[in-house]
Image (cartoon, rainbow, N blue to C red; front, side, top):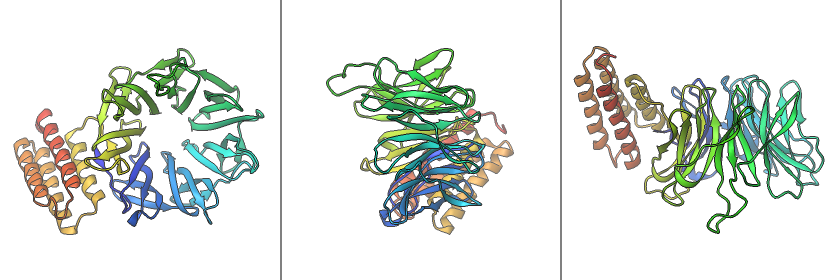
Length: 413
């Protein structure tokens, strides 16, 4: 796990990652005055991408081309609108379907954006929309009296989300295609379900109630699911608790989300594959974490509570795939960059990491381990000084992963 830090405040959350390793999310600014959308790269760290003129913005998705979508308060803070951001064009207001507010939730690599928008200032109904730079915002739901929202779109233009009839007790997961329109995906036995993501092969993930009857008198317990047109809904289970939620699926079929553990009210991020089932990804020391997105290389992003921190204090988090020595060293370097430490300390720590890399490349595993041990000693010496306890703990833990990778791999591998 890698802590990406913040834009200067106490809070941050990563919600999207692309196949280039770029990460997007939102973070509180210095003094916790506002929350702004960010784009993070290993070379540039966390960059504030601003707002539509209001006091806050949030990210929901990121394409492989680096297009970011989400929602932002507009000037005057009287409403919030969906936005599309690119490095070349900046932040573009997507408007609404005639109402006051809108939210952009996902974007494909072709630039198709989906989400939901109020359809009139005089009604609470919202409809799923599709937006392109050429065609603008189009209402996907022409059924009168329904509320719907689009949560994801794949490269073929298949859109998934949830749709609820006026007066109904719960929404139902749907899949929409230009040729077939809306298809109800059903539930796992309860009243409600929602489709959260879809990959390019058309496999859908989300969450569904499993029963019509409240459990233990505290309400329904939703479960993560996958759906395909051939096999329908499949319950992915939990990490031992009552509920789970799937948030994203890669083209390789890796599903990520969060689940209650065997400890009541403790929820951890998970990764699920057909071969390994549901795996607990752990936390940064607190009692909860959530995996929000995964790329096709197995890089998972989300957020986690820190050790001994209030529940409101979470940081954007990256879970790395099973590391090689090279990837573990790269992650360690990225973490140092993200912390923005004093120049001298950054250089001293970087020299030790690069020294370990050079020793490993020459087949000198023990020497590489000695250099990482020296790195750990320097980090411990700066604990409570240039490094907070939480930063020091993260660096020591990541350095330990490097040592484990060196010992596990063949020398010089």
